[in-house]
Length: 150
Image 1 (cartoon, rainbow, N blue to C red):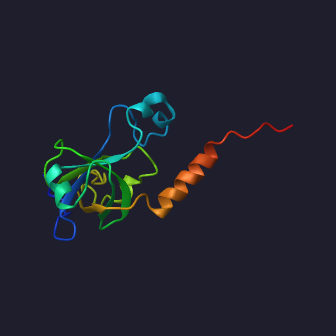
Image 2 (image 1 turned 30 degrees about the vertical axis):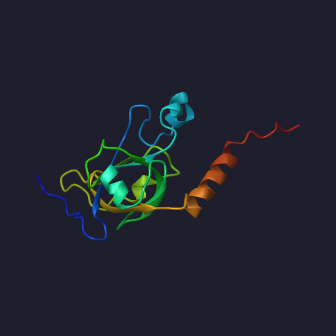
Image 3 (image 1 turned 45 degrees about the horizontal axis):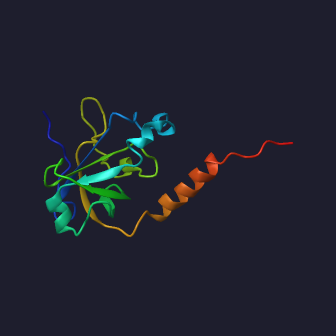
């Protein structure tokens, strides 16, 4: 066992762990185009009720998730499924870009990135970031069905 170099502190007091869910596969490139979106239509940040209350966050609120590496916004899911001091999200939807928040640290033996241990701060947000709104508009445009050429 080798401990991580990632540490929490006053600026980033919570630990983020990321993971997958059954209905989506990795970044969802194939499964987001199926009916599986009925079960998982967006990545959400799971946050313990005590941590949410301390930050004025309610279930469904937009939140800013920030680390030393980057930031993103997504909706909160207040739940006791995660322990106090820990937040969790999936990384299946490109409009979330959850991996921009994860650390640059990697395991010494395998060089696998440490997706499970990132010090973060979470706060309320007014909604998606500008780049997320731009991405949504571009994605909607890319999915448009164009009329056949005559």
